[in-house]
Amino acid sequence: MTSTKEALWRTLERLTAEEFKNFKWFLKEGDMENGFPAIAEARLEGADRLDMIDLMVQKYHCSGAVQKTMKILRKINRNDLEISELTKRSAEAEQLTKDQREFLPSFSFTNEMLTEARFPQPSYKETVISTVTQLKEKLSKDMEMFLAVTELNRLRQFAVDVTLDPDTAHPNLILSEDGKQVHCGDITQTLPNNPERFDRAINVVGKQSFSSESFYYEVQVKEKTSWDLGVAKESINRKGSMYVSPKNSFWIICLRAGEYKASRVHLSVDSQPRKVGVFVDYENCSVSFYNAESAQLIHCYTDCSFKEKLRPFFSPGTLHGGQNSTPLIICPVYDNCQI
Image (cartoon, rainbow, N blue to C red):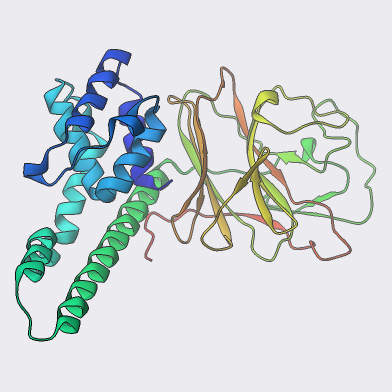
């Protein structure tokens, strides 16, 4: 899922069941005049909002999916929804591709001309068509990257100062004096067994708690072989063994044996993240995780049940024979991301 898909999902989530049904109907009908072919009814039948977003992106690419969504919202009298993120993304897409469109006014028109023209050497025609196709794919990827970076920089406006709470840290964890770093030691410290402290799981939570507002923070994870990051309800049980899952009020991702997971879901990443961004949208009940350097959306939990204060959650993992001694580091968040 890309940041564009997340914006589309947030928009479609606000449609009523009847409006969503009408939205599907317009996708089935298509709009060839404006370059939006119909999506087969069989593929739309039974599709939920996330499925439909995937279908639109596959059919029209990210920028086309945004434009198509805005057109349909106007037709079903919900153009109030397009005012926010979708309008912003459409404007950004227009700005990004202005020079590119001047160079290639219409890919479909160019391909049509190449198909109908008679070339003395067929291989030349095929070469040109292949070049145009590759350029189109390149521009589409550039557009997706631009929108992803723009979205991540927007979320960074919600950055908060997070420090680790020593009163919650497992006795094997070693925290830095400024509360920004944590790693697992090989000696169990003698610490008060207060109710807030984890006594079995190698965990610690942030001092700060959050409710009703969105927040974002970043953590350096490079050179580590095991870690957990995310948020948890303030009321979670700190004693004994625990199963970390959304059902038990933990929304985290983790690294284990070279694999990234969200609960039991295996995650696909473009590259191994060295820094992870965590964004909580309290109002929309979602938790998103980003590669803070590439802007890739790693995973997003939706329909989360918060209803109380949340705390940032950390586990640097055990030492693994010294292979996982590098600390987790809570990093300063910078407003702009240049990729």
